[in-house]
Length: 241
Image (tube, rainbow, N blue to C red; front, side, top):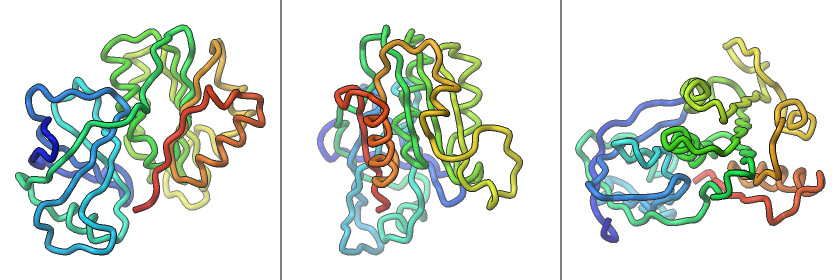
């Protein structure tokens, strides 16, 4: 796609409490690698603020899917207020794709993925791409949220395990006392003991971490203190803009 090309909104849907996914028409021939991002600029927004009219989003859709999808927590910024109220057919401008936060090529090495909250977006793209292309990588996706109500794409990430036997989802909730739903999965923060229970038969893994900056820092520290080489840890922070 040319720099600054326009794309039109198809729809936006709530995928978790205070979290919206936005699906846009994907121009013919536009390609990206699962895990990459794009810069989105609102055109002639009804309001703006000091943070400006452009944001970087990981692409949540996989390359084979027909629409371009991004997802975000709906915080109270001018950008997000405008984005939330855009009617279908509205145009935004995008630049990209960019970034190299993508699945490694050597399929003999497992991928251990640690996602916190909306940090799931690049990994949704990765795991759906891996299933579509029948990649042989062993993939363990640890997905941490406060409550099931906050976990975007949870049901489809669970269902994907039936399509790809090399992929496993381990979802965990840290504040079930505040939830109105039942939960039989893991609880508490991701930790080495949780790894030991679930990461089996993983050869020399590459670790991927994405989420809020404080969580990313904490998980990187946990991994290095567990003896993981820093060269085998790849991370991306999702600030709350």
